[in-house]
Image (cartoon, rainbow, N blue to C red; front, top):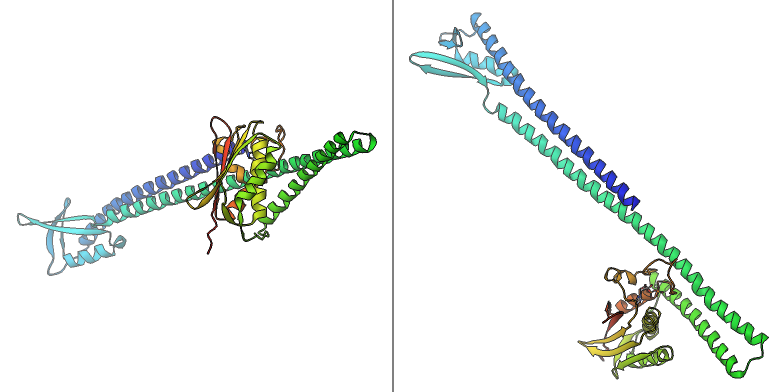
Length: 380
Ligand code: ADP
């Protein structure tokens, strides 16, 4: 928030400065133009005086001289000589007009045609250039500041996510280890009935499974990230995989399932099982202990897996982000559910590598639906 305010302030400051600079330059050019016009007009006056002076000295006289009325004076001058003088005076900025009316020649000296237009167009060009530069600089600064803002935000977000990751991994590692230690110590120090002892051993095994799953997820995520993972290439029955997964999850939660038979896909059965497992784990974790529903069916050349829970759901604004590495909804320090933010990253990467796609929508009346589509295996 503070960063945003600071950036808004900097951008506003730069924009105001550009605006002010451009305004000053345009203003200066306008003044310069007006001054140049005045100089030209004053120069005309000087030109007239010089012309009169020269004609008094008979410098324009010849056999072809004409008698002119010029202002309050009368002069005799040859037009060719007079034109030559005008051409050499002040870069030829002035011209003479000769008019004969009622047998009387009149002479007038004026600023050369096009001279004022040239100054005006020079002014317009400058104003155009300044405006263009101001717009270009504003765009460049805008893009630059936006880029900096985005990068800083990304670094901040990554930092936060990595912190979250460390916090949750520590928690994920410590909890099953502590539970296993406690159970094994109890088995060793106390004489327990066989049934109780087996129950504790089962719990210890399930905790070690949890550790194994975490290690598997971290390793897979790392391999995927580094493009080191070699995907298996075989046709296999996703029907069997889903049936086995559903059976194992039925032991942990209430679950309805509708699995279509004989659906075959092509790819890496190991990583696809990890992916489906991640989706089911999440459905339990964020499912508020409500029943789950799992479906497998075919549609338009795809095997479709839908996993529905009735839990906390995912706000619309978060639905794209949850597939990013380390991303978890909410704040780690106040969160109660365990996790690393790697599960859905693996799922998305895996499904897309298999030519499929994954989508999350809202379940009715509450919870989430994760829909996975994988291309059906076609025998060649
Ligand atoms: P985690 O280890 O945190 O579960 P995931 O990558 O599997 O990591 O999921 C990322 C985040 O997406 C989770 O932290 C959670 O906030 C959200 N999420 C995933 N699945 C669900 C679900 N079924 N219901 C609600 N939120 C979910």
